[in-house]
Image (cartoon, rainbow, N blue to C red; front, side, top):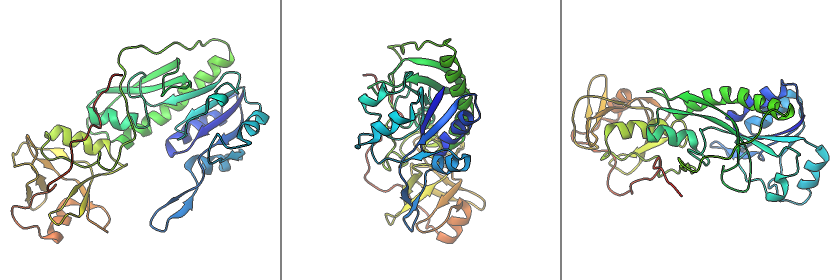
Length: 322
């Protein structure tokens, strides 16, 4: 089949490479326009664009799929199917039927669980033990289309969202190609999603990544891992500035929520249950470093409490049922 691939971040690159190496013809790659990133706000190409150019595949970067001329441009490519992995924008209804076999999306959850932009992060934050990936046909709903195939993946006790997404991206790339093969051979029929077990996974905000020390240690641990590497977990110092947090580890000791205890080789912070041991932290304007090294330089006074006042309880990781 003639395949149009749509994707943007690095998690979509394994799927792009798998499609390029498959028996199908990769006619073009659709990705988001270059975005400004870093302190210098330099225009940076998406990971998918970089990979596509390395593969020698034509790249399309429309600002919006509704823009004039985009539909005709895609029609001229005459794709039999469009494969989608984290493209980052909605496909207009009039384009959904443009390829004969529609748009086949690789989503990093076992649908209907965790529909939305951040399924992996929400699965970690919620404490799920198993997640996976699903291929399905896009429709006008939010990840509601009928499914072709799925795989499952165990969430390991120390997984960050980045660790888990990396494994799913590789495993999911094979699932996507198998799905395209099955569609081409006429062996796959899309099956409607179950009505039960729906949960939503909206994009995480900076406020979602703020650690609430009055939550249990396990919840703090999961939130930090679920927000690593993005959007990045954080707390506040007594002066109100932000302290970035890498993954933490629950320990058996008990401290008041937010209370810091600095030892020779560790820094503990209290939660609603037991304390957690900080891993790497990033002070304002500084690179990440071991928490013990930071604490020695910061010379925190005894009785220092992280988190300060204010902030509302986050709903990230809470399951919702329409």
